Amino acid sequence: STPKPSSAASDVYKRQVSIGDGDAMIPGRVPSGFASLEIVARISLNGEPIQQPGDWFARQIVESGGNTTHELIIDQQVP
Image 1 (cartoon, rainbow, N blue to C red):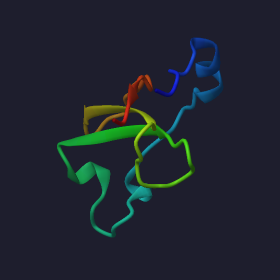
Image 2 (image 1 turned 180 degrees about the vertical axis):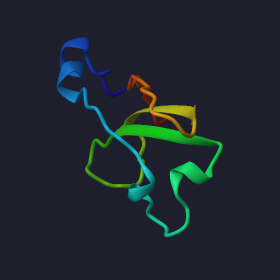
Image 3 (image 1 turned 135 degrees about the vertical axis):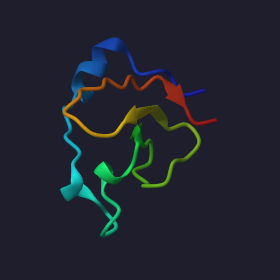
């Protein structure tokens, strides 16, 4: 099994990201149009955009709207 990212390495991946209506990938389907959003952060082991076995990730459902901060800890591995 792939070793879990160490806490020392986790400082390297700390990022602050803002998501707003201007980030919509499909016109008309903006974040503010949904009651909740699923936020996923993933570290790809092979650089592919689709998750692969062994990739590390975090997932969280958050309420849409407002200016809120959420912390995701990447501590789950794709089987």
